[in-house]
Length: 388
Image (cartoon, rainbow, N blue to C red; front, side):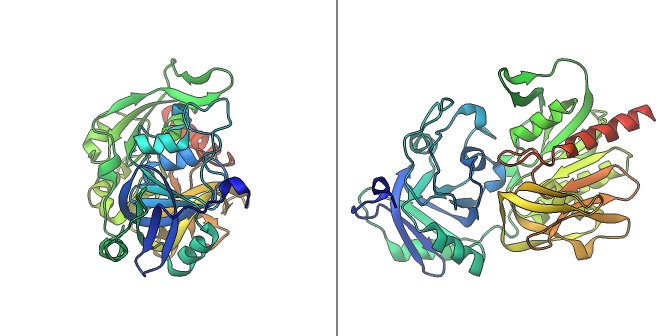
C-alpha cells in the first residue's frame, strides 16, 4: 500500500456487524452513527451516482475498487438532489480530486450532507464476509476521538429489522408531479432540453434516477413524473402514450401493496409499459409472479446478462437485493433476460403485448451503454400504437 494511505493513528471509525465482527478504519465525512444493510459494489467509476441512487436507501456501500473520491464530485452527476445511501466504506482514504469537472471533494460533500465514510478498511475481507453470510445488518460509527461503545453498536445492528417487508419508495419518491425535459449529457453542450412535442410518458417515481428520465427524454418522450402512490386513474387521466415504472429501494412486495393495484389498472389498457429494477419487480408481482430476497444482491457495472430472445450478451449496471422468481412467472409472461453470474431473472415480457421490464439499469449511470436500446424499444412501441 502506498505510504500516503498508511496511518499509525488510532481508528476513528468502526463497522460493527450483527454477528459481532468488527472492522476498524479512519472516519471521514459526517460524524455519528448509522445502521443499515451492508452491500458491496464492484464498479470502478460512478461513486457519486451510486451514493445518490435512491435504490440504495437503507444501505451502506462497500466499494471494492480502492480509488474512490479521486475525481471529486460535481452537481451534474447527482442522480437525485441529495445522497441516499446511508454511508460508504473504502480501502484507501479519498485523495484530493484530480478532474477538471470536480466542484467539490468527496469528504466535504459527505460531511455537508450527513453521510459517514470509513476508509482504511480491508474491503476484500469485508466483501468475502458479505458473500458468505449474505448482506449483513451493520452499525457504522465515526468519532474523531476514537471512542466507541462496541456492545451498543453490535446490538443496534442486531436490532435493525432489515429491508424485508420495508417500503422505502414512499421515502424517496417525489412529493408532487412534475415535467421532465432534460436529455442525456453530450459534449460540449452538457444537458440539452427537449423543445419539440414528443411521446407522452407517465413515469411513476419509486426512486427514479435522473439519468433514466434523461434517457426517456432523449428517446423522444415528454415525461410527466408522478409520485409512487399515484393511482391508475391518475396515471390514465394524463392520456399517456406509455407508462414507465422506475427503479427504487426496499422490498417490492411492501411497495406493491399500493403500486400493484395501479399497475394492474394500467395493464387493463393496451398501453406500452416499461419497468426498471423495482419497477420490473412490481410489474412481475402485478402479473402474478413472486419476488425473493437475494443473498447479497447484484451491485456493480460489470454484470453480464443474456438476452434470451436474441442470444446477445450485454454488460450491465445493476443494483438490487431482491429478484423476480422466474419459477413463478405465469402463462403468457416470458423470461427474456438472465444473469450469467447466477442465472437469476433479469427481464420479462408479456407475450404479444408491448409490456416488458428489466432488472438492470440501461441508463448506464454508472456503467456500460449496451442496453440503451430498451428506451428506443419503448418509444417504438408507443409510436406503433399511435400509428395503429
